[in-house]
Length: 492
Ligand code: B12
Image (tube, rainbow, N blue to C red; front, top):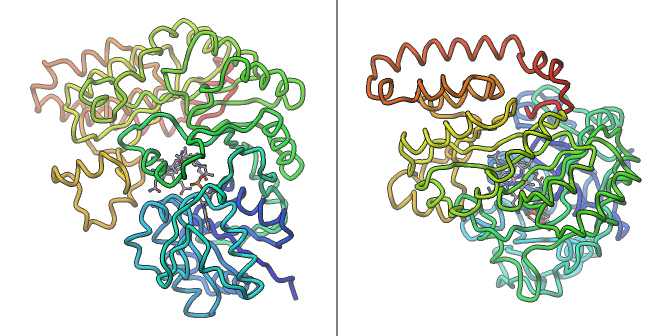
């Protein structure tokens, strides 16, 4: 008989990083509770395969409390699995994460309790109370349909992130369910957790209208800073702790804004990182407005492999709609540094958001032409604009008739699935050639003489679509990367 689990955390996703869920499990483990982390990548396996369903139900049977942590795209899986658990057991099932925080008022709960906001303190108190059969109805941040909702207060929030115990990084006490397999071998986790995504801070001072961040800030009580950083000492300890459990080959800093740290803080981090870790490292979530020359100089001393910059759009209409009017300014001033780093084999990745109903084709062309001139090669990451609950732009798009609130499939659309338009095909051409397609050709293909003639666009689009399929088949990246000596493999 396998040991009982005090708290089973289910993350309805295949991404083994599960950062927030590991932070919460770290806290519970530190308080002496036994925990298990289960990844469920789609529910097809559990629905169709009796053996996989049995594995799932056996894990539930061993657990005292079951929690789900998810974003909006994980909601359907969380709902399905909760119903399945409730049909077979009478055990407490709770939900938390950004989707629950934003939507708790209108979630037709199958869960016993929905947690609102950051939960390091309240979850631990809830688990303590539930396991000891004590009352938890006076705890804040919990919606359970019976008691009045008590909003967050600062005694239940982490003021300094360094106060937290280290997250749960372990190669045991984890399982993964895919459509075809149930996996719980420590070796699998050790060898598949290679690239460690770490968050060295929380929050973002910007309020881009497509991001739920500013809405999530409403759930941070007075007296707690919206933007909080971990010290470099904590970050280094966390990486070492993770290295003990997994065979890490690289690190990626996933903060909204790593470069918002002061130059002194960055210096300190670089010094300790190089001395004590020295694994290849990438930084994502770089906002152009923080991409200053002095900061670039400091981070260039790291064993850098990639830098990812959120451009999103260059058009005035797009920047206005996104509330990012001043954000892209610094990028132009740093192009020389980009070129230098690029030559050293550091891969630049640029995020661009497409399919914004508030942008015209002319607006898209501005972004397209700008991107085509960036120092090459680079990786272009194209996103279909999906407006999640709680975002300012979603409310605007609903009142302007661009989103049907009854369309439940809306939040399920993968962000990689772009609208099939001529202009998006040109973006995809840049994407699949890693920017190597000549800017002159992009200018020609986006010139009025083509755009004003639909009869021209159709055959050109067809040819480019075929070329893109072929390029993807021959895996151009491997050749380019080998030829140029690039250090970073690409984002998938
Ligand atoms: C880093 C990040 C990612 C990373 C990793 C995320 C992670 N933590 O696992 C990556 C790049 C993988 C990612 C992917 C996506 N992300 Co993201 N991401 C972020 C970002 C920048 C930080 C998230 C974070 O770690 N915050 C700090 C942690 C501590 O906070 P937290 O996650 O909210 O967790 C706390 C509480 O929610 C609660 N909690 C969490 N889980 C549970 C479980 C239980 C049982 C309980 C009780 C409580 C609880 O306690 C936690 C600790 O205090 C945020 C923006 C932001 N600043 O929040 C967007 C954000 C969370 N992402 C968002 C989105 C939309 C996505 C994607 C759906 C994008 C896409 N189209 O594919 C995917 C979904 C991937 C998935 N796992 O399902 C949205 C979520 C909005 C929503 N309505 O769900 C945000 C808010 C940004 C935005 N665009 O508005 N993301």
